[in-house]
Length: 227
Image (cartoon, rainbow, N blue to C red; front, side, top):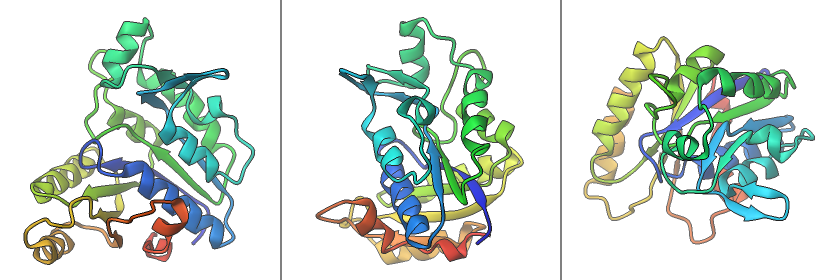
């Protein structure tokens, strides 16, 4: 795979987007590729002596082989675990596409072999005014990787997300089935339906793991299926 960058999104919040992103970055490192990542905005951050820190952004930073600072990876961090546009409003910060575009282009300018820019929640996450986080992906012009949280209702969420990504003029480069509810009825049939209907390769099926690490997740992912 040649040098490439992707925007990674999920079918909803809490579908394991960061878990999969970290796994993809780890797989890239194991393949001898240099890696970089960005988490433009994060809510639900903890105050540390170094300032606000988000566990998802830290997980991405840990898988970056290029020397990046926390502030480069996650330029906007907010403490409340609420929708980013609400957290930004409470903090008096204008959360616009333009405010996120410059720092994310800075990450892409590093030209790592494999770069991921991770969204927050699903595809249509609001920013300030009428801006959405999907507008950032459009402004960056990145192909998209969709993390599908395998649970009841996931087919509808996945297909609607894929339709929205296509309508926004972006390529769905691949999707990952993250089995967050292993007791989902007709799991195999649901996976088969998604494989038939999503216009991109499945990069892997990640089972519910007892020990979730970037390394353990990477074992279930196939980077070679990405264009």
